[in-house]
Length: 167
Image (tube, rainbow, N blue to C red; front, side, top):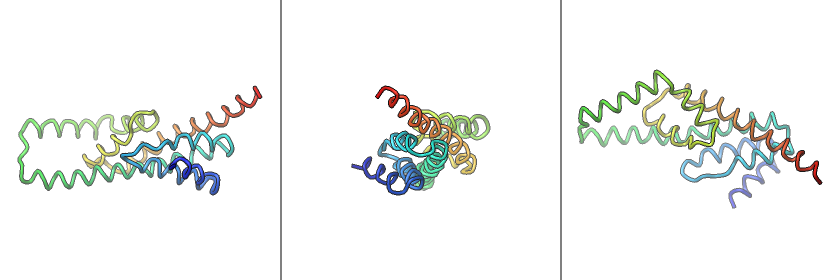
């Protein structure tokens, strides 16, 4: 049902529909929506380069919902843990993970999750929960999502021509 709605966005609104379908698909943090199928289909009928970029931007902006969920968890956790003191061991692990992510490989991890079928929503929630720099998060997510959606759009473009050669 929701797939039909996303597909109707593309058929009725073209590139704007691709953007909205990707935005909605990525914003659905706890419900998986197959918006990648929409991108493949749109890439077969529209300009795949434009489809990839537009869908990537929409998907990256949609991932900000997961970041916001994590940020809300951070503030509710902070309120909850005022009553409960963390042990030194718990505080130590939390600080180690945050420092490693912030200083070392945070943007690379975000990019890898964004450009592959790995569950990038988990990374968005995690980044919000540790209050990772939103500009770095959005930049890495944007680059990864654009690359992923360009690949998907060209799969649709070349795939439909490949299949059409046999019929």
